[in-house]
Each structure stands twice: as C-alpha cells, then as structure tokens.
Length: 67
Image (cartoon, rainbow, N blue to C red; front, side):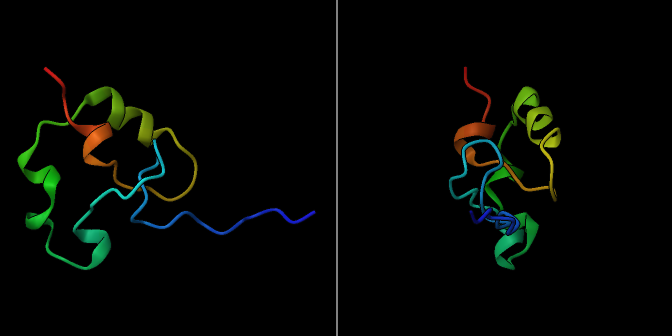
C-alpha cells in the first residue's frame, strides 16, 4: 500500500483543498492578494492555523466573513 506523504501545495486551501488564490504562493506581491482587501473570518484563520504541516493560506470562500 502506498501512502501519499507529499506536502500539500502552497496554493491549496487547508480547509477545502481548493485553490486559495494566494498571491504570495504564486510569486506575486502580497499587496496583490485578495486577503489584503477582505475581512477574514477569525474562526477560519484559527482552524487553518491548527492544521498540521506547513502553513497555507485559506481561500476566499473559506476566509471571508459572511454578513
């Protein structure tokens, strides 16, 4: 049995495994990232921080505060 031990890509959201649209992960300036202009959900940030492995940014769907 093979077990996948490859690290998750930096461009993958740790909460939903979709594209996190992180500017830094794709080599662009952080000022160009969607998260710099958004209010982020604190619970989602905490949940992502509690995941094992290297830190990865959350995606807009998981990270935006809903009103």
